[in-house]
Length: 334
Ligand code: AHR
Image (cartoon, rainbow, N blue to C red):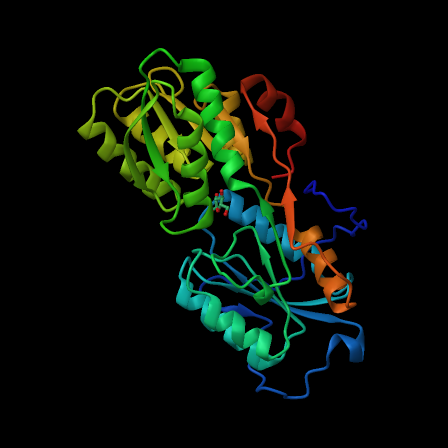
């Protein structure tokens, strides 16, 4: 369960009603025209919430989707309309416009990239539909375009990763390659910024950096390229576990031992990453907690009730070395 600065009402964790459809499509979205008899929350006590998810690019994303679908249930007072944007901003904008047309009570989304949202958010505001951001921020000068942003501090995650590297390797002339998340996304921008700030002033050096789009497959391909280009890589900093797991495959295929010949530091702490850490193939993981469903439900209910909500809700994250991963794994939720 996400640990936040909020005092949260306890929400029942019940099995998801099957509202999730694969692909760039909506589930339970219906195609009702605007004003087609939609009841508002005030009418029927049910909050119709349209959620546009980034995609299904990583283990983290799967856990995040499950948390939202398990929490925003009919039993908990929600009618969830869920769509998967397949990592494309145009799909998210289209989904948001559909939710506006349908007259949902609340729109929530995790923006695939930071910029380019003002126009569609203004349309939601004009239609009187409140918007809640989850996981990723938008880069906008107008913070009246959304009610609240619930998510981790990505800069801090990058800083924590960089501090561990400096603490363990400063003075060794460490050569780092970086697997960046999706270009233009908040976590890719912020984690890079935090990591670079933390290694500043040390002799740790980033010798190459490229996006692996937060996926295992692209992480592997980019790491293969790094290995062909450089014979002096000491450490991989991957912006998520999945890309780190892809790097492990590339390192092993090149006849080296991940975690020994090349150290690996990642962000997320999903089960597969934590298992690799426990197995000694990853050396350190900074957590990014994906269980945002309960906070989203609470904030959506408060917004509909006309209550004041916090503009920024920071989800607290931990960090794990091998021993901590071994201890945490048996009870790990995601
Ligand atoms: O926005 C959170 C990031 O998105 C996670 O770290 C990554 O795994 C996901 O794809």
